[in-house]
Image (cartoon, rainbow, N blue to C red; front, top):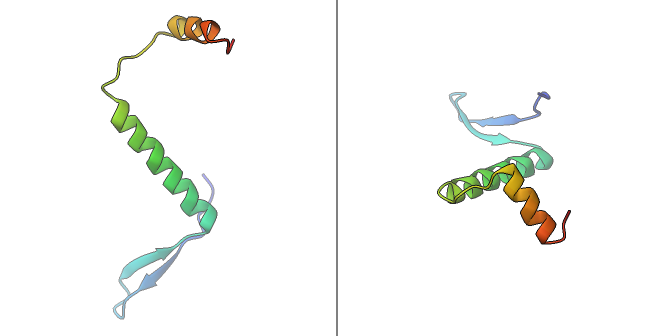
Length: 63
């Protein structure tokens, strides 16, 4: 894992109150959060086996 470049904003007592991240790292975190939300939304959906998926992709012309 790469070392993060975050910096903190602290209050007068030195307690961390906010963080400053590079834009790229922030966008990556947002993308991860979105991916997790999609997974949570779809957790009740039925699944396909690998073989079923391959057949469906072949039928749809993707393989």
